[in-house]
Picture 1: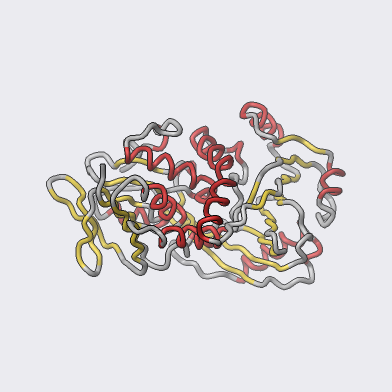
Picture 2: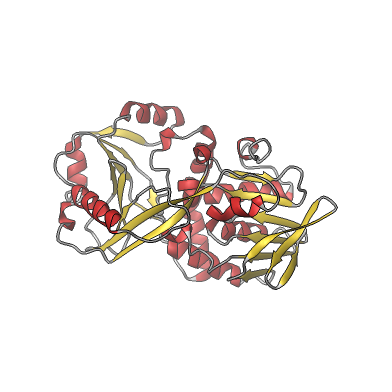
Length: 365
């Protein structure tokens, strides 16, 4: 069993990996180049479902279903132990005027998920603030959103309370130490940080770090911008999605509108064009926002990967090095399952699902 595990990257994947491993190994050290949880995990919307779950492979679906079922108890456990409520808020989700509605319904029947077509009048009855002109709707009950900034705050608090976990923020990792064909630590500005196992969970930066070993990981930054409004607590009773844009209600009346999909390298600058586009989408979905001023506008960098299938498992030819990264648009959705599967693999436990689709073997250049 590993005595010391070093995790590189403190987003929700790194944080939850540390949380799961803390009970299984002697010591966990989590390093992040900035503050933990302040990149993609903080910037996302927090819908506990892929935006269009039927468009993904079975590999993503398996992780998503496990995570969706597990999130409520994770939220309760973190709230009870830290006093910080991640606010797993079950509202259901309406998709409006889908081009591939038939495929969505067929997927739901096959996967036994509670998604069904509803009369558009029923959608307007349930969400009276919805914009006019929509013709068709499907609804999935039980879909929640998690308040991701609070989730990472709660995970951080939980880790700080564990005696065998160390958080090292503002700790830049420049590469990996190799000895005898094995990865035995990471290089930091303060010297080598030794490890029995190193876990790379650095989001959009994971590919850059793996390249120091001559390996090509097809993970790249994909920019997303969002805006936030503040409304009455009961303004929007359910999440709604149309034309690739969504509105997410928080319990306190905040409404998130997202998001753009931009290939702009590591640039996280919010733009006026995106602001105008997101406001137009907000008003089309919810005309009551026409006279409202966004209270925030930000951008984050998703770890884009082929088909959105994450890399979970050991790196061939580099004993001691592991990946848990590349979740693209679904890091928050897939985190509970991804991190439990990772913990199972590292500790030799029976994996919760078949790990083969996520194995780095055969998927790295």
